[in-house]
Image 1: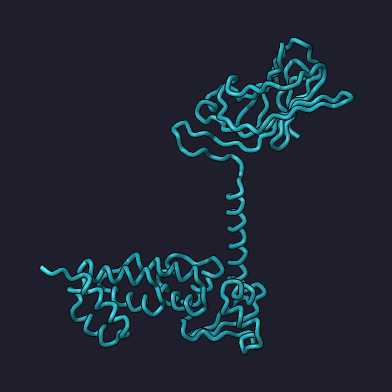
Image 2: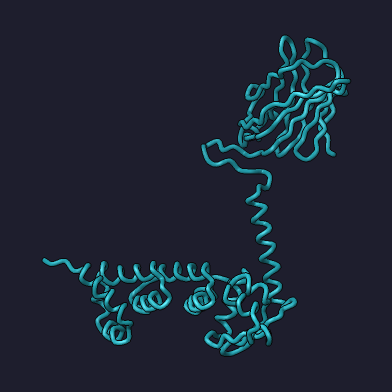
Length: 334
């Protein structure tokens, strides 16, 4: 337990632990005023004061200083006043959320009067730095989102080590030019196709091997990198078409969406027909629409006369019909 500084009065210090400050007042008369020593919670020093005349008032405020001026606290807190005499009484304030800069920013009028020995507790439920220019406040304590982010990073680090160091791997993957080791549980959690392989009495389950002969060692490595959360941007861009095919084959929807998004980003003359074919083959509506728009709405088909002849000789009949309708829609008679 840490404590605030001690003043001349023995009952002026505030004990602190975690997010709780507790001020034990040993003697308090019917008409009195008392202020605590400063105590630190979060990045600020705080004061509590009690004033009693006809009513009882409790104030909570940060120490006036440059820090408070430049980084004022936005506090969410609750106060409690209780005595230790027989027939213990306790008054609890509502939960307050306020920007606190001075002693007039928060005053709680207690519904009951307390004399002699009693305790004032302040519990901070949250503390943030309020923006002085109107932006979002900054938390000083980890919130649930931050905790989740830390936990996710830790889990990904563990998965990455499991793959890179072959920790308890239990399945061998045969690619077109090499072998890789992985984990049945991780693959099954990612893909319903892999899950089905290992759930039923299939060859892959019996032999603990998977043949992925339509992928190179590099592209399959990129696939595992994605599954285990350890793929880098360069590998993704280099192997994204192969990753798209694998995502479609093994029903990995989030990877398929990621590949489509990436392929839409860099459509150009040198790849638009190839992208259109991929969009048709893997049922990628957004990529197909972007390619059609590039070719017909923006008129780039006129720059691909030779290439389009070759494309039409190889393209699927239904795709050619769709392209014909796009030509008619884009054509505007003079």
